[in-house]
Every structure is written in structure tokens, then in C-alpha cells.
Length: 421
Image (cartoon, rainbow, N blue to C red; front, side, top):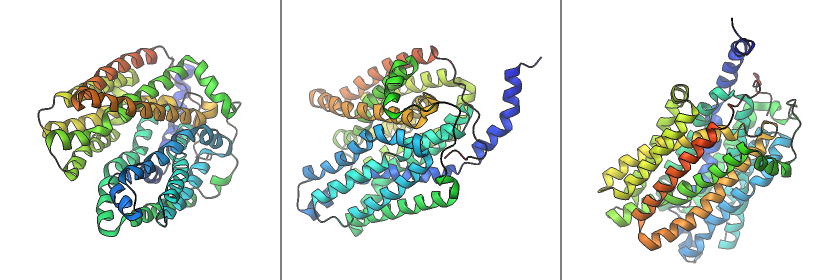
């Protein structure tokens, strides 16, 4: 005889299907793309900016920190603000304002002005991806969430792949200012398209979910008090430390210095990571269904450790090229589980919870960059990749044990008409 739970799940399955398919995921991914492009835009442009503003390249490197610090630290405010005013509403406004300040960067007359404009644009960029992820947590059932998040994050992946090479080509031919102008105008257009797509619904007061909302400052304490919250934030921190701030940013430099490749060739090889990530977005539904979260996290984390170890002993650049594609695939197998759990860590304040996840990732990235720099100075790229491989394997085993100890999330039924914005 069918249980009440099974009958309920069968009854709401059509609603879940409508909720998952009616979301303009391509448009949301575009918002993620323009936001993520702000991180990579300056990679090939720093020498051009230094020459134009008559400063050193070392001085212009401050422009990267000016973007990333407000991006990460602003999560403490942006997440709770999204819970209070509406996640998609705040994300939409943030995309538009981000575009305005990115466009204004094109008119900056000096380094100080450009740093201020970059900082403000970084703050608004930080609202986009975490709040859209939290919004998807509101309207997509957990069984489909990892697949949907993977499709959304295709935009971020494409930004990592394409922004640097494209801005380099445009910058060489038209100057660095035109790169800011193009990205800014596209961002404003994406924000306007989101506003047009959701119309008046975007400006309605968020509907009550039946749960008591948690005030912003209390979210951090409540998450840390919960074993599942501590597990999530610690996993995110070391994920950022080992990968985002540790191994991944240095693959291109390794290809140039260890194998003598040019910047363009190294950039193309590094872009293979995005190709592997894109493959994951196409396979996510089947992987989650067949393996389950526990095995998916374990397989992805083990694959990351193996891939990083491969970088440490790679005899030639074609081997690294293949490993980059592989690493892109297994990274999202591991990281995708953490992302999905972040959207369910505190459903009554989902925006603040996902922002806390992003902040932990950012802090780990910053500390990882410092630590990996010390490893490079002491032993070189290969020793650094080997250390990251060992650390990643430890993190994988620890995260797998923590995941096993947690109950399977049972989120509320999503809003079939996507009114909760």
C-alpha cells in the first residue's frame, strides 16, 4: 500500500516539473555571466591600464582586490537584504547598478577613481549569484536543484572561460576603456531583460513562507550552532582554500614558466576547465539520480585529488590540457553538492545562508592564495599542486563523513507560478 509520503510526492510531482521548467534559466545564467566577468575582465588588461594611467602594473593589481573584497564582505549585508526585500528583486537591481558602475569605469581619469568605481561594482556584483541561487532554492524542489544550479552556473563558467581572452583581444585593438563599456552596457541590458521578464511580480512584497524569518545577524550564529551549518561553512572554506585560492589560479603561470607556452596558448588550455564544467551541467541530472549526493561528492573530490596530483607530475602540456577538462567535470561533482546543501541550510533565510556559504568560500580563497604563494616560493608549482592534492583528499573524506551524518533535506513545495521573487 502506498504511504502518505509517497502519495504526497506523487501528487506534487507535476507541480515540481512546472516549477523547474518555467524558470528563465538562460536569462538568469546571463546575469551570472556578466557578474562573473567582472572578476576576469582585468586579467589581460593590467599592463594597458598601467600605461594609460601612467602607473606601474603592481599599482593596477590593486584593482583586483578592490573588486573582490567588497564582493565577498558585502555578503553579510546582501543576503539578509534579499530575504527581506525579495531575492530576485535585489539581484535584478544589483545587476543594473553593477552595469552602471562598470560603464562608469570607462571614463575614470585616474587610478584612485577607477579603484572606487571597481569597489562599488564589486559590491553589487556580489549580490547576483548568491541571491539567484537562493531564489532557485525557493522555487525548485531539492531533487532537481543540483541540476538547475548547474545549468545556472553555466553562465559563471563561461565567464571564467571567455572573459579574459575576449577582453584581451578587444583591449589590444580598442583600448581597455571599451572593455568596461561593453560589459557595463550588456549588464544593464540583462538587468532590464530580467525586470521585463518578471514584470510587476518583481516589485511585490515577498510572500510569507510559513516560517519565521531569521534576522540577518542571527543567521550566522544559528548556522554555526547547527552541525550541518558548521559542516557546510567549513567545507566551503577549505574548498576555497584548496582550489579557488590554491591550485586553480596558478595553472596558467605553470604552463608559461614550466613548459614555455605563451599567454594565449596557456589561456586556451586553462579554458578547458570550463569545458569540463559545461559537460557536468549536461550530465548533472543523471549523475545525481544514479549516484546520489554522497557518492557524487566522494567521486568528485577523489577525482580532484587525482587531477591535482596529475598536475604535479605532468610531463607535458597536452597532459595538463586533458587534466583541465577532467578537473572542470569533477570539481562541479564535488562543489555542486555543497551548493545544493547551501540552499537548504536555513530555508527561512535562504538568501543569508547562501551568502554565508559564499563568504566562507571567499575567505578560504583569500587565505589559500597566501598559502599557495608561500608553497610556490618554497618548492615550486609541482610541490604546490601535490600539497593541494593531499589537502583535497582529506577534505573529501571529511566532507563525506559529515554529509552521511546529516538527514536528507525535505524542502517545502516550490511556488508553481514563481511568484516568490
